Length: 570
Image (cartoon, rainbow, N blue to C red; front, side, top):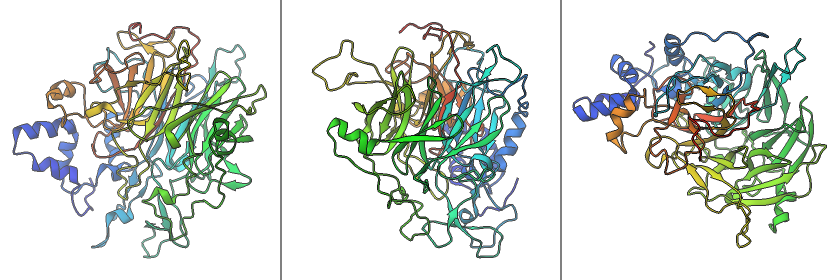
């Protein structure tokens, strides 16, 4: 265990300082699930877990997990029910130590070997949900050196494995998009002779994005879309989103959606506000401009793209801690979440938290019929970063907190206020309301902390589970998966839950929750009828925020039922 750090992190101090009180000692040990207690009590020289993921945590995880088998034609990577999740790859710290007076944060960098994408296999949990942590088989992982920091996810409907022409071995490929939702790190060349670049907070001449911000090995950038082959796991650069030959300047992409009928992908660009469409070879087939061609359809003024509003990390006006200087397009034209339903593409606009849709022609091009669908009724103004529909036409939305970029890598999103909501259409339509969707949505409880609003903006629907926790292959969309922060820690709000929570495993779970899609609030409050999965298996730091991103489930389901979870009927 390395001990080059000048002081123990705050969570170790808090843990040690509470050992005198039996009640507080129990709470702290419950929070840490013993692991962090062991580490903190054995050394006063640990760096915070937000920093250490590239070194210490890899060693810890190796104690508990074996290597995942390499994909092959006989055992393809993607299997029905696989859950792909994006997250921050973690950081590394110089192993040789630092001279006195040097701030360790100045020499802490993105870990190129850290994992920006993990694919989990949760086909059998072994028991019914009771708020417990689920230990999964070792996931397939992709390093930051290949894809950098990513958020959005989409599966295509697959290609046949070579040598099979009967349609029975169709395997989906996965697409992921570059992001600033897991921070934006900028450096200048080494100027102190230590062989490492220098982190900077404000723009300077010679500045560049830190290695690991984008995929170094694949020469990726802030507008990159990467593809993971569903059979072999090979990672390639699929496309770069551009506008009239100009690359994305730095804000990155919003989300991505697959159009199964026309075999194309849609991706939202946070730099320009455009929605681009790509064929399956990565060719840009054109774009839709909500600001110009969408807003006027509902009586709003047109808001064109401002080509002068670009991120410039060499300008003194750029501030890495202030996302308002990052060149994001106007909130009135900024599109995040995307989803196909029938022949329409639904998309979420930041300003007013509006959901719009636009028709898609038979040839895949955009129609001229953009329409406002609804204003999201939420208690926060957090952006809707993901949308999904079930087979009955219900629309599910997930919010993510405003982008942050703490210098210590601890927080990338405003915490604990984002919601997961569900809308359905009015049947029959109420002519007295402006929308064909109900005005008041249902809401899902996400995580145990007070208000149960710990989501991080990633949702998807997957197969149901039976009463024994086994996946039900005939139940196509029985489970709602939701990414979130600190999902099992509620001891400050409800310490009486301590014993029950402890029985379910560690508390500091940053990952995702799996719940029956029928358990809308007030059902499942607190959410003991959920399974929980941790993204990196560390359980070390309750303070990090925004380190997990989107989730997407490979779901080539041909069944018709939408129940599951013991066939709970809504």
